[in-house]
Image 1: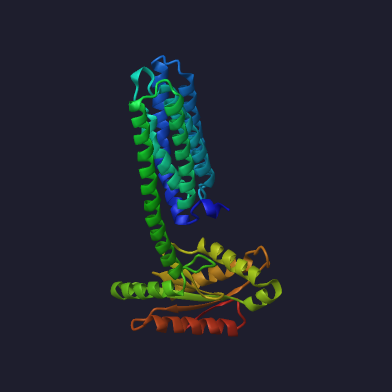
Image 2: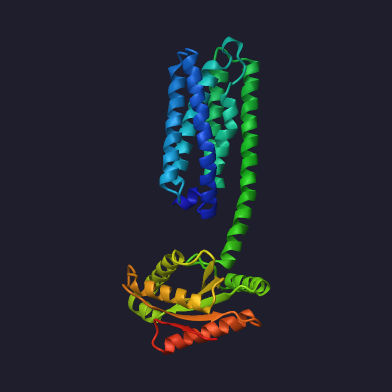
Length: 356
C-alpha cells in the first residue's frame, strides 16, 4: 500500500532523510525565534502562539523519529503532511475570511509565502499522482474560501478579488510546474533503477556477475601497474539442491539472503563481494596474497559452519582460491579458482582449496 503513495527507492529514501535532517532544525529554530518575538511583543493572539508551538512539537518528534528509524521516513512524511496541511489551511481560512479587506488590507500576509512550501512538500513526500490529488484538494479549499469571501464578506471589493484571483492562479501554475518537474524526475529515477538492476543481483542486492566481471577487469589492470597482490575466492553452498528439495525454493532464497547479509559484515572493506550465479559467490580480495586469502577463506568457512540459519539450521560452503599471476587475464584467474572449488567438492566439501 505504501508503494502507491511513496517512492520505495532506498537511495531516494536516504536522500530524503538527509534533507530532513538539514531542514527540520532550521524550521525549529525559525519557529522558536518567532515564538520568542510573539511573546516579547506582548501579542495577545494565543492562536498564533499555539500554532507555532504545535509546529515545533511536530518537528521535534520528526527529528526523534529520524534518529530512531534510519531506513524509512513514511511516518515522518505523514506527520509533516498532516501538520502542514492543517496549519496552512487554518491560517489561509483566517486570512481570507477575517483579515482580507479588513481596514483596507488587500494582502494575504505571510500565508502567501508558505503556499510554495506547502505544495513543494506534497510533491517531495508523495508520488506524482498522489501529490497532484492532495494539491488539487488544497487548491479547491482555497477556491471555496475565495468564493465565500467574494460572495459574503462585507470587505470584498475589486482589490481583494484581484488578490484572490492572482493567488489562486499562481497556485495553479505552481502545481502544474511541480507536476511536470516530478514527471521528469520520475523518468530519471526509472533510468537509475534500471541501471542499478543491470549490475545488481535481484535477490541479495549484491553486485551481479556482469558487475563483478567489470570490477575484476578493473582491479587486475590496477594491480598489474602497482604490483600489489590480488586474489579471488569462489565459493558455493554445499548440497544446496537438497535444501531446495526439502524446504522449497523460497526457503532456499532466504538462506542465500541470510548468508550474504551475514558474510558482508565479516569481509575486509577492500573486498568486493557478489553473486556469481545460483548458490555460487565471488570475492575479489585486493592486497591479499594466496596465504592471506586462504586464511580469510578458512575464517569464512568456519563462521558459516558455526552460524545457525533461521530456517535450515546449519549449512557449509566450499571455497576455491586463486592468486593473480603476472600474465593472467580474468578468465585465467577465474578458471583456477573454479578448479580449486572443484577440488574442495571432490575432497569432501566444507573446505578451502588453492590452485597455483
